Amino acid sequence: MSANIPNDPVMLLSYMNTQLRDNYPSLEELCAALDLDQKVIVKKLGAIDYVYNESQNQFE
Image (cartoon, rainbow, N blue to C red; front, side, top):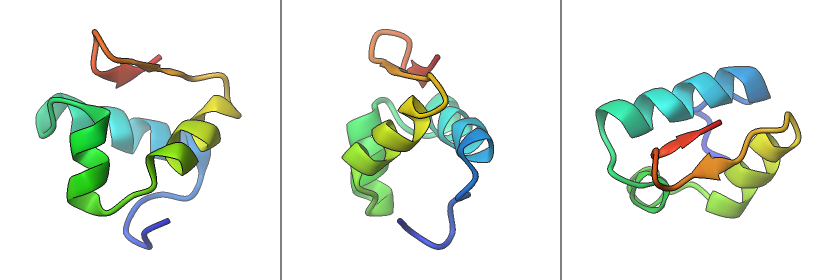
């Protein structure tokens, strides 16, 4: 995972949802733009019981 995003899952959750809300229309576009592995993000946030809701464009 990129060094400029949080490693802690709770901080990552906040970061991802802020980026999705403010800058990106989808998780796919966010991951492509920041060169992130979407599967790693989904797995890491899944470990704290958050899943990506495509219709809301956020992890919940």
